[in-house]
Length: 419
Image (tube, rainbow, N blue to C red; front, side, top):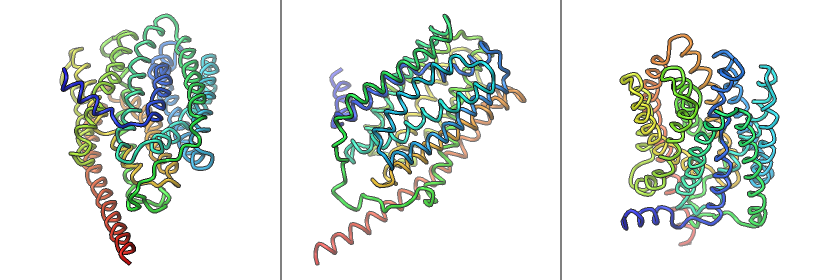
């Protein structure tokens, strides 16, 4: 056991206290993440919405997420990540109590849009906060620590949510709202004293990118489009997979919650170790592309085997794909940005996921309604291959460009110092 314990100690070592406290905030917040994983099931079984109406509501949630990500990124550069995170957590928590009382489709659509907009203002602000509190050499591990906390919370939330849903769906909304507000209060009490903290600036000025708008950075825009394709496939986890578990395998809400919690548990246990072992040894292009191929395989397996046990194998592969891809996508975004435009870059990066929230549920449910689940899983498998190839090429070009710029700036710095 000693080598294993030492491995974990090395993987978690060297991270700042602020990074740990930020992760604790996200753990509190995500431990109450019960509504969204069960929203599709809630709308169809509790409120009697049709499959297309449910897909439309989930897509509206994604539309709000797009607007919230853009607004959050813009506000982060204007007023700072502290204020944006505090408002998002506390106001977003209160909105769950309002959503609990909505029944009519139009009111539900409006409520879901506003909730999503406020909640997803958190994403670019949180990412900018993590990057500012982390040492340059620990950025990927700082993001992984934050994701580890999110996934531990996500393993708790759906598991508890499945049990609460068996009693009454109203407890999902109450628990989600209460934990969001609790996370906001804890965040305020700790991080208000950290406002004088100065972000870590690399000693080597060659590591600081030139100021550029992400909307004029063509390579980064291509990267964002590929991230959105990845997220469109991955987010079947939250939209159509629960419906598949319920309608095809007749799993109960409790069993669905436990199965989805397995994703968070696997990521919690393995991500920091994988990032520590592979982060500096394998290229980001290879890791991200490999994650995409693993994701496609997780869905294709559902068509090849019909046993309930294959659901757990599929979830394992999906979780490994998340570990290989997501942390390094965040790092690539940080490396592409500078201190003055990090909010904008993180905002555009999170918009890629938010846009997938629009497309993914509606596209998934429409394919299911027209052709069935098996067609959807084959389509996911094919799309991951195309996206993996795109990622490999684009990330390789971005890394080449970054290293070339660093070499030029380093040579210029040496020339200035000698003169």
